[in-house]
Image 1 (spheres, rainbow, N blue to C red):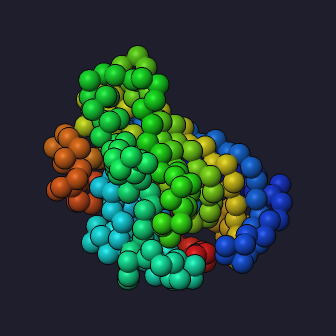
Image 2 (cartoon, rainbow, N blue to C red):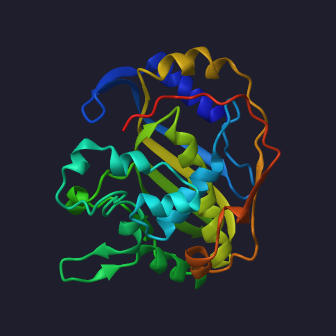
Length: 283
């Protein structure tokens, strides 16, 4: 929690104004921030200085792991974060490749589960990583990336958190996740939860103990219409201790994640938080 608040203060105090062409808004921006999560000791990185909707974050992650490409699929899991990008993004609405309402195109999990090659094949990056780790193999390339410049025009949004690199060391599993763009008041806590849960889940289904997850933010920003709420409300609140996350131990395989797992298989205990803050969302 403290590292998140430190980043927020750094942006407020040291950030530079940048105009964002896509949203038409200015952002206070810093470059490079490194966050670290103690997954092995189950210190779940939920923001406590406002209410955090962790269930939607996990639902979104499940959709990515299943390779979903439609906002309706995410809604069925309990996540509404793709509604606007699929249906209110002006450039995507004009794109001739859009298949209709709720279509997201070839973004995020589609790339992770079905990366198209020039010779007509499709590569399942996630399955390769899970298969290797289940055998105790770390080839220094246990990487899942959603960042495919050749297909940006085929989706509604370039991926923000785009690459996940797993490493086995001393019998424990580590994760490095890289995020190119980070809406710190709104999006980052979603992403913090997802990095933590991704390591915990992959460790569980591959039979390893989770260690630490390292989360790198490249462009970390606070939008101009979020600044007052962050500076004058959230940063004046005292944080509470980190809660804990319980994952159903019956989840044992990638197929389980693909088929029957729901939000009921995740439980957070000891979560104390301040009132919700309704930050503006930029499409």
